[in-house]
Length: 337
DNA sequence: AATTTCACG
DNA sequence: ACGTACGTGAAATTA
Image: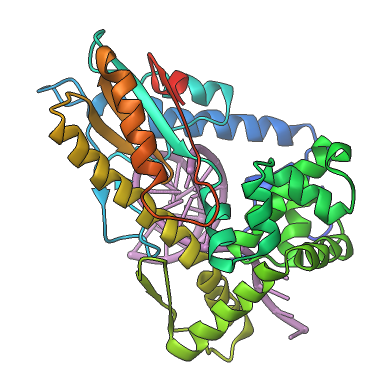
């Protein structure tokens, strides 16, 4: 429609119309926001609403997924046929879909338990960064603490926008951030994003050292490891092509963190399974969504199961920072979350 | 069959 | 000069 100077194109020379691109064009033409709304609604309809009812098993009236243990390179599970690890939650209409996931009958309730900021806690532990460990130990809201450090202000002076930016930065750290990537996500100039990253590494020097050490290890050995010794091999870590090498370096940083979180929840799942059996409880672990476990629990077992789940999740792998979980129950998956 | 987009953590 | 945040799976579109 010629509403932008240099339209971004995909590698096959088509005009990019992904959400990130369109959002930047919302003010250029009234059609843009209509397209975005249409896209989000048709996504929900075609992927979930039109499909899931047909997948109900007539034998038991329930939907069954498969969990793959040897697909994700980091050690995470993946879920398919259908994927129950990407059920909507972020939009209002999406949340209606999540409400359809309910306990087996009226005597049962759904219990959801999830780890709080587990990957950041793991990077704090693995890097042994004194400041980040201190922030977690003092029970501070980590994104607020990061904002105060990066902007050089007091905790109480952190605005919502600053906290939101710091949260984006913290996520970026886990993924192997670049100033370009951060500038795109925060919609700020490269100069500003570079400055934020520079400040971040000044305040959390252990994090930078951990990243450098991890990449050096990958160069020397050709793989990186989680705390439990799970390896990810990185064949491109010595590539002469900077782009390809950059991907491998970000994988080197991310895999030990994401992979350790995967190890942790898997250990918790084994321990919980055994404990439920040992106590002859009727509660059943029915789903895993990377940092969350969902249980179908007889209402009279809820208090006992909550204690077991919290204990096994928190104590699966010891970290030098607290490991915290959030849990709640509900008449559907949205309420329980 | 490959690519693009978008749902989730 | 170049490309650019990690991990998935499913549906629609393109070639």
